[in-house]
Image (cartoon, rainbow, N blue to C red):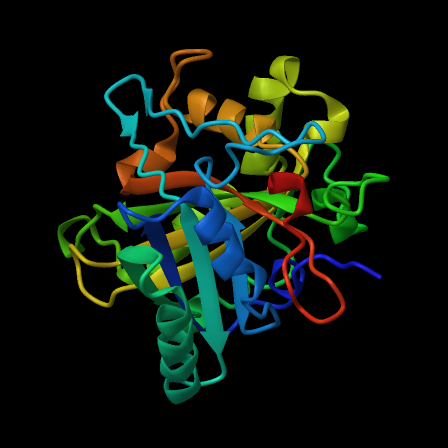
Length: 293
């Protein structure tokens, strides 16, 4: 029986490396898919395919483009690549070993463009565990809602993912520590349980007219990166059976819908952004890529 990639629903890891790759100039899409077809996916390795690898997708599988957004004094950049890979481990040694194995496997067909080493910062644990979901109904009952449901085994249990790096722009001068900004950032992107209204509820109300209920649910995960001002931030990963909510949220955050700039831009700014398709896997851990050939 086919399943989703384990990393989508597994608890957040202690350490992870997020990498983005581009097909080598002389490598074809077919060659790239052949390499990925024998990449073993498990709790330590997961993969998302960019629009170039999806060029020949069938069965109604469409990956929308990550569109850069501009608004009231803020912008959201697009840094789309052909392949996104996350490796994770219980310690740095295991993590480094997995990363080297992935790089070796992809070598010659894919070129590494950027990688981000991320981790669970101590103060972030209460915010960034299994509760990082956003939904129009705030129903946290099942993570299966972020998976595509289809009679086609090439699509069923797959998921779309939006990835962004947000760099902290706050400083000691305004009294904000990096740990404090972890909380501010995660609070903007997850369901806060304190107060009369959560920030995500307010966001959903602002974009409610442009989303459908079945598209109004995403599972969002954040890990920290960097330890010093000017280098620290959070790496945001959001899974869903559609990317419409994420795109609508970005437009809303930069003030395109109502002219109100999201407070998140007061303490951080996005520096990367891309959309990917995480195919389901076979029982042996191989990606199901039949919809792309």
